[in-house]
Length: 266
Image (cartoon, rainbow, N blue to C red; front, top):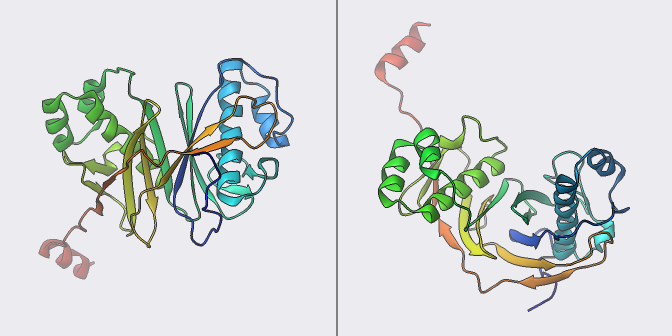
């Protein structure tokens, strides 16, 4: 059912994820991009420019969806669009892959989203052997499922975005078991994670919230003209179920007697 989100109060807003498919045909350089965005985009080739403009268009439509403010009055902060500049108070996470973009929005920090196409085959076994934990290697290689790999990969990517880190040397900071129970390396509490499939993509979201682990809301943003910033059609995908993945922290290492003695002697 088309319509805007009801999450218009930052104090009560849940996590929401907004999906938009990039147009196939190039469009004119839009004048609604801010000066900083225009500068960043000015040297991009056509393909990269379309992806950049579409993602910034989606950010504005998502902020319109959660706040009710017209899209032309919405914009992200400069640099990586991890938060809103107008209206202030929203945290953002972006992901785009093979023509689809996703924008996650929350009123609280600690937010990450990742999408991967279900149809795209990769040499995933090599990735698992090179970058995943031994436990993950055991069950993923035994199961031999590309879809299972995508679940683990998107969860790890969303976790790294939510905790503000890149992929390099950090993929093992989240362990994923065969039954999708997660163990993260951050001591903070109140982390949550969820998976779903929509529009031919695997979607993972990770967020931090002390109020509970309610699943994010999911929306499809339908619009064909990104050269102008009119409000797009916002369709709730409430029929798409999320799988909540329990997320707990690594146990803190216990101090050995030798370590204790060494510190007392120091």
